[in-house]
Length: 112
Length: 118
Image (cartoon, rainbow over all chains, first blue to last red; front, side, top):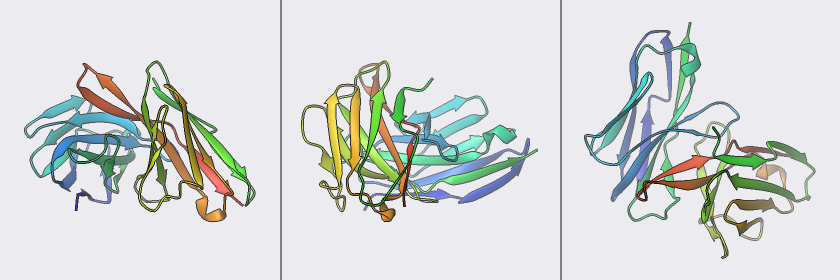
């Protein structure tokens, strides 16, 4: 069964304290891995798509990496405005186009 | 800027009434849109795939007669929750794929609709 697991469930950081969020996946065939940011009461905001092992993408303080089993979202020198829930989702080769399998998310809190 | 919009953002209704939620793709055409539901502290769960000009495809366990989907145009899909009950209270989110470069696709989500059934 295709599965996506995110860890930790919650992460508290001090402003400027770098860390990483993990997304491990078990799927029959990976078509793409997506990272989203979701603020309370809002829809997910697209961050990155990764397609193959070894691929990396960066956006401001965020950097996403992908291996054959997991993806990391690295946050460098986070700021309070980075506080949100970060969602990881995978799209499989065998699934329908829209069938993203989501992890439960990591709730990030950055204190000033 | 936003590429997918939803309306309304929040709705409160009485039990037994029907509620319609609109999802629009902005500046691009989407032959396929998707409807998700998210309960508190839970992840998004795909409810159905909305196909322009044809019937929607529902995920297992989702009642098609309760959650009516209409994809009337290439930029608009609607979800109607019929005879809503308190257990239907949730956060409903739509999404659409936007193709870039002909190959790579990104699924963009709407801002969500909070439904509360009293």
